[in-house]
Image (cartoon, rainbow, N blue to C red; front, side, top):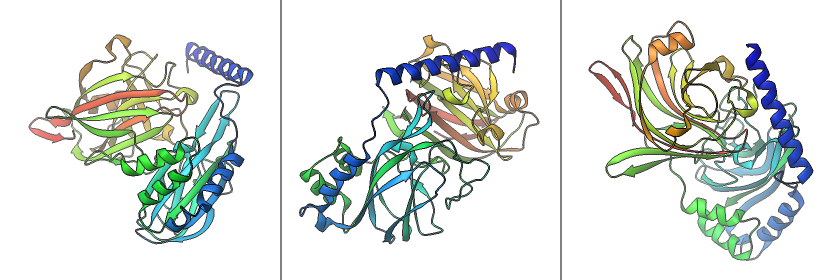
Length: 391
């Protein structure tokens, strides 16, 4: 790293530390521990005679941010069961830099000892289970899994994370919506029950043909929208993270191009995004058959044409960023892009691979807890007469 880059990074860290200290002195921003109040409220709600008949099983859990692993709920579930999760709390990565994560990104579940893991897309979520067996939960801030069965990758320990998440998990006898309506009739806590009912009534469907990357879990960041006859994908991220993927088996040649249009209305970070503490951004990416991905991003501060390896553990081995836009005067405008993918790969990463396997949309706003808003349209892979319509 050049001396100027090192000095810039030090300046960003000092700024973040001063911001964290200011927040601590004022006592603002940082959430107050509320586990006891949460437990007391939901213990009362669940025991109410109007609610209890709807519930097959329910548990209140405190999920620690340590290395203790999956917590058993002592509930056996079966495929088709409807489960609601309501959670609060804070996981701290650094109090010095005021870096913390909430239940929105930290609650994972697994049905069965070898079941497939899944994440709640927010502090509240209702899901119809695909698998059965003992139900487990774990608090896991952004990091890496060894596999989709929820084994932890020993190369990326969770040491240094403190705090806890407080969770109410309910397995309903019948329809979750009817149970949540009954629950809301007897009380609420910080609007969590009303939000849970709203989420169950109006879930955000994943855009057609796309899926969320399993490593980061399901989300509610992206949604299909229409402007006249034109289809867009709208992205809205706040204190969240999600990668949306579209399969794309496409040869990579000298004339392969990725084209798209996007309109970025708000960026989730106003600081240089090339260090861990500020790595919040919006982008579109191409994944290749060698496991690498090249992601074209908007930046709040870095110069256009800047390339850098992702600063996050695990991702630093597979992901490279290319700052394509950074002019604030272009925010809120539809912009058309056309990138020579092979030439870009050669410049930013090295010897190009043979094929493209996926196109991604990436939204990160978890580190600085900001808000990002953008829209995508007309995404295509093009090579001569060969054309793959992505969006």
